[in-house]
Length: 339
Image (cartoon, rainbow, N blue to C red; front, side, top):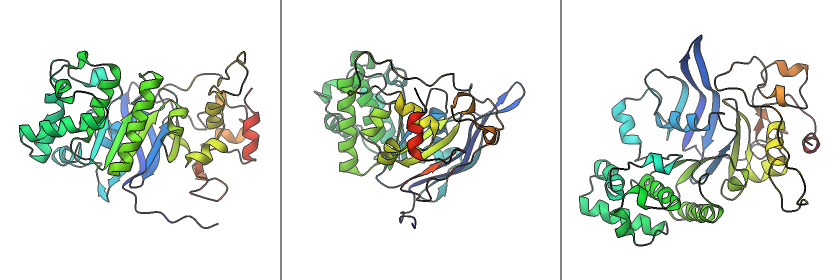
């Protein structure tokens, strides 16, 4: 089967690595990350804590500290961003790539009113007047279903609810009309009702503006509601990528199958014990010559002492995606390996 035609990627990542100093030398937080984000697409990234999801978003934005080394390539509309000057990155951040940070309460400055924080970037990047920036901020808050936006703009972060603060962060990221919106667990701290509202707002935003998104989360259920494709990360690497519907139906990596099997289901008896993946993920930056998931994998064998590379699953890329695993048996067999 020949590959499906693909448009030129809006954001293209090749061989991305993030290395920070450690007691015994450099420690790899991310290794060999390959990703493509198409125009108007939502790419979901999922994995356990410490797998490198937030590190990836920060690397895309160039937000590392000075002692961190980046390797590989990050191209936005064909322009290389790794190694770009601070002046160039300042023009790209917010204007072309915008990041919604994980913790809204920590991301917002408690000493500044919402209006000041929302309008500062737009006035600098777009040259808007104070009045025009204020009007744009109020319009965005209203579009994100925040009542009385003019009053909210005069308030401080602590005066807003958690759901409102999260939507303020999203509105701040949209002030300069970016092409790509990076969302770092935007619904994790919200209750299920507000979570559903935020997801609905994001879906409407995509349909209305065409903004592309990279959506990072722990919650596979959330990704099912918004993502077109899903990338699964483990120990600083991508271990599986596929169209969302295909990955949920037929995962090809034991780790992906374990994550899906750990999700609660409505069709199971109430007294059923939730399934878990035994063991713990390796600490960030831990080195391994083989598959990092092998110590926790029920299918581990001798070949797993060698590092698996991403390969096409079923020779039907991109429909069936890519997987980094030595297991080459039927996908249906993965459903039976987890108790």
